[in-house]
Image (tube, rainbow, N blue to C red; front, top):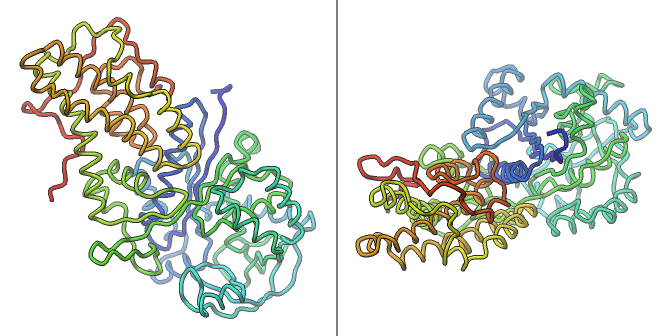
Length: 525
């Protein structure tokens, strides 16, 4: 791996005052697809996740439960990682901001920024939303009707001595950076918002709190703790060795991609790169602000944003336990366009599951395995080195693979899945229905064999393209046949590297009582 290109990506770290919900999970799924895809393409990948623990909300929640804050945080980290593992999120490290490695590195970072002259003492007064753990401007509060625009509760007037980060000094440098790195902020709507925000003028920002027992002490004034947003952003560097392992930090930083929610774009695209400039390190290369997930009422058609504070949370484990991780992954990656907003409803979930997974992918797979096993003793003789036939040539698989690659790299995951179904699976399923090999095998076994070989080849292509999206299901299908390339090492280039050398196509999956184990059992209506 020494000569492999490297790819470092992160997700936003989460408040562990409640368990994760399906909106939080969408972000992790998108990052996971990107990580899995990069690994397929030969990158050495490092994916970092974590929890944002040095917050008032977390300490308050621990107090409500009668727990020590650190004990509470450690248990929530266990619960979060259990959910992420259940969804097959392939993270490499999970950082807790209550960890000693994070505390020590944060103190080192803020001291450096202070020594460089970008932190000064003053006092601050403003409208503070405890839900956001952030101050709101008079304009934001007024335009929202006297409440926080995100949490819909009145903010409180708060005045306190503090230390400021001189963000205003970086306005021109940030604008120059955006101009020189036009892909830094994505999608384009987020870029336009940040540009307008910075061009309108930056104010120095309060980066400390006083009188709080929970948090990271400011090294040059121990009466203060570091404000959660200044501390949380640093997890991206402390998680790869800043302040503790310089070789590791140099290996991975700067991050190739931060995957975050659109509501925290300003922090990541203005405050965070300015902090990096102030400390003398490179800013990240790219920030992608994804949309929200809304809960749709199947009876009224109304949709509401998922929010812990609004009490309409759906636990990912509810869907994983009832259906599967693959079904969860498919629905949210297919139905929720990553650059924009998406909706979840139980009705739509069942419709999409049955149509795309059970009836299309699952049924195609089951038919081929069953027919080859029952009528050809599991082996299609004479197919060694055979070029795929009509269905393969009618579908430009190489072009489709490149289109899917492009969509993944642009974080357009729903469009990538649409292309796989529209350009590969749907034509294959239609071909299967038109030729009806379950009938043809009774009158022309050779012709039926050719049909089944071609459909199996399309399943091979589908599995490779689906590997970043549905890792378990695609592996199950792929390893049900003796396809030539080992599953662990397949890449998108293998989509068109199809000729089989020296061995006939065989089915390796075993039938149970004459039936194929369903890939996606149909949801009864």
